[in-house]
Image 1 (cartoon, one colour):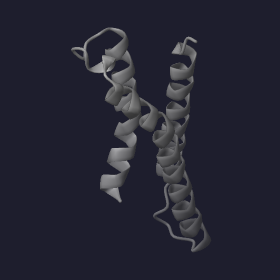
Image 2 (image 1 turned 60 degrees about the vertical axis):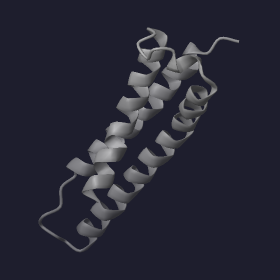
Image 3 (image 1 turned 45 degrees about the horizontal axis):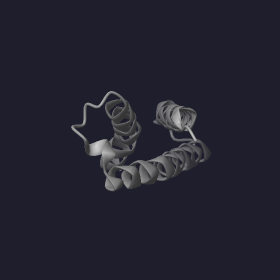
Length: 101
C-alpha cells in the first residue's frame, strides 16, 4: 500500500512538470509529437480517478479503525489523500484553462 501511495502522490506532480515543460519547451520537441498528447490526455483522465480511489481507500481504512475503536488511528492519511485529490483537480483545471480552441 505504501508503494501505491507514493506513486499516486507523485502522479500530479509529474503531470504538472509535463505541462510546464511543454509550455516552456524544456522537453526537446517531445511536446510536438502525437504520443505526447495521448500521454497528457491519459494523465488528465487517470490521475483524478487514482487520487479519488486513494481518498476512498484511506477513508474506508480510517472508518474501520474508528469503528473498531483502535487507538492507533490517525486522520493524517485521509487528510493527505484529500489534499492530493484537490491538487489533482486543480492541476486539471489549470490544464483546461490553458486549452485554446
